[in-house]
Amino acid sequence: MSSMKPKSTIVIFGATGDLAKRKLFPSIYKLYQKQKISEEFAVVGVARRPHTHESFRNYVKETIEEATKQELIDETFISHFYYHPFDVTNTDSYQQLKSLLEQLEEQYNIPGNRIFYLAMAPEFFGTISANLKAEGLTATNGWTRLVIEKPFGHNLQTAQKLNEEIRQAFSEKQIFRIDHYLGKEMVQNIEVIRFANAIFEPLWNNRFIANIQITSSETLGVEDRGRYYDHSGALRDMVQNHMLQMVALLAMEPPIKLTTDDIRSEKVKVLRALRPISHDEVDQYFVRGQYGRGFIRGKEVVGYREENNVDPNSNTETFVAGKLMIDNFRWAGVPFYIRTGKRMTEKSTKIVVQFKDVPMNLYYPTGETIHPNLLVIHIQPDEGITLHLNAKKSGESMKTTPIKLDYCNNCIDGINTPEAYEKLLYDCMRGDATNFTHWDEVASSWSFVDPISEVWENTKAVDFPNYEAGSMGPKAADQLLEKDGFHWWPISSTM
Ligand code: NAP
Image 1 (cartoon, rainbow, N blue to C red):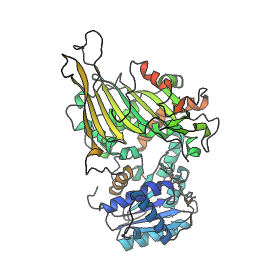
Image 2: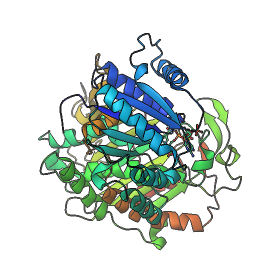
Image 3: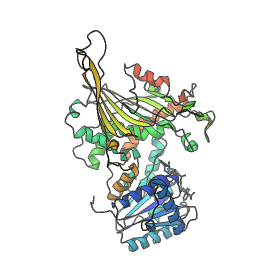
Image 4: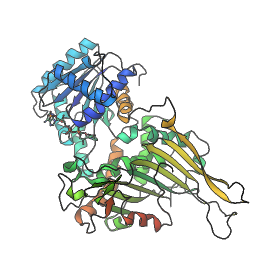
């Protein structure tokens, strides 16, 4: 890994699409603004739409102005952008792309380092990789890397097939699989909170932790992603990747060193230790939901089945709650509860670690309970940590009251945490794959998720829609915890 400013060309396949517009261009711009990349870079956009270099630059400029809400006066940045229109299934055009890259590498003094960013539907990943290799675009004097977006397969089998296709052209070390949750500041902070504080790690096990809850809720519905989402659902779209990645970071053993391989191998061990759920156990451990009509911040919204490009009898889940058991020494007996859904009360991603009760309640011998200690990690939209403790209620003899120690990352002036994509792009340019998912992680998480989706696909959810838009999901999600004697902690920003 080099500490010098990385020099590379970035080829964005799907440069006229939504992801490039909303995330990639603004992220490259911010890296440039912060002088994390040198003047020695070029971006080449690929898509079918007929743009010239000039009209593409205007388009990129507009997207950046939209994202930063500022006029882009200095045109130097934009001058690094080029456009090469072609259909990626057409093999002839790759030679022209190759010549363009060689010309730019000379012009900008870039030592043959190339990032191929596939911001396109996964059905093209195999074709593009194969053509890049066959036409010689991966043979350079520098390094070449492939960045790919989710979804990585539809189940283990299709993920394997996709992986084999891209592995024909790129080695595992060259493949950067994006899970944008891993680029989030507070997700990266999980590791630091755990391994840089002497007070947590000794308690981080089944002797002191009662359960861990991870919620990732959205208020949005499917918006214009109906066609994709109706074939995917919340389990594939959120659980297989983002939710399981957070579980792995919370549950992993301390790595020997903070190297990519050491961290990834500890995460994989967690995913392998997940108790497998067989077809007939799915109902015991998992709950699915689909939103009906309801109100989001006072505004009436339609149910999932009435959304554009969604089957009016759709069996697709827009909500998942689950109980995960990690069968190893550290976690035996501690449930990890996860839930995620669309059209919920609030947009929030939060982790609540609930500690076990003190061994004896000295303060309320007749019944009242003491609030358990909680460590809350706020991931988005707030970023911070809250520790819930008990203190003496002032005045009144010996009663307790819950108090909070709060640390808020984005409340502090000057801390303007970078967007996940900005960090991940920078990591990729520097060759740091720690916050990208290794194939072994992808494979283990599909193995866990597959039996659940098989059951859900083959049995119609007769109670769908089973939660109102604007609620916290179906009743069954609450019952999942109640039967273990727990409940979901609220996700409101005051937690
Ligand atoms: P999108 O808006 O539909 O963009 C697709 C891009 O691919 C367009 O630029 C399109 O441009 C180009 N394209 C399609 N067929 C082509 C072909 N045969 N040859 C060359 N170019 C072609 O999709 P997106 O939302 O940006 O998503 C891209 C990928 O990221 C998908 O895998 C998606 O699942 C994933 N993803 C997206 C987001 C997000 O926030 N958008 C988040 C997570 C993951 P032309 O029509 O001009 O050819």
